[in-house]
Image 1 (cartoon, rainbow, N blue to C red):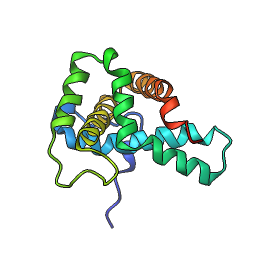
Image 2 (image 1 turned 45 degrees about the vertical axis):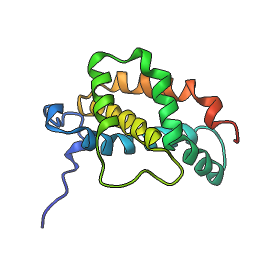
Image 3 (image 1 turned 60 degrees about the vertical axis):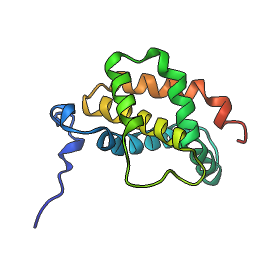
Length: 146
């Protein structure tokens, strides 16, 4: 019987060189990281599950992620700007979701690629700082209908 590689949860696990992954692969991981961060944040809000779900849907939308990226853009290093650009310009095999523009979807992919890169590099302090700042700076956008 094959066992799943649960060692990725081991703090000593290494993904290896981040350059082994393309921007869409990093965005794939970053999408989940963004969702987990948002849901963890909302869990502490004291809201009912339905309200948390509705707010999470707004916070993980391509438009909200574009706004989050814009909110932190001035703080990004050259390396971070590079992965965002690669993520934004990456060609996925599917169309953007029906409630977003191609530009919003590209920016969201760039933001998710950034999250993925920082996670693979185990730069958790930077990842959590940027995620927190992105959420805080855009609170009025996704919090309007809470």
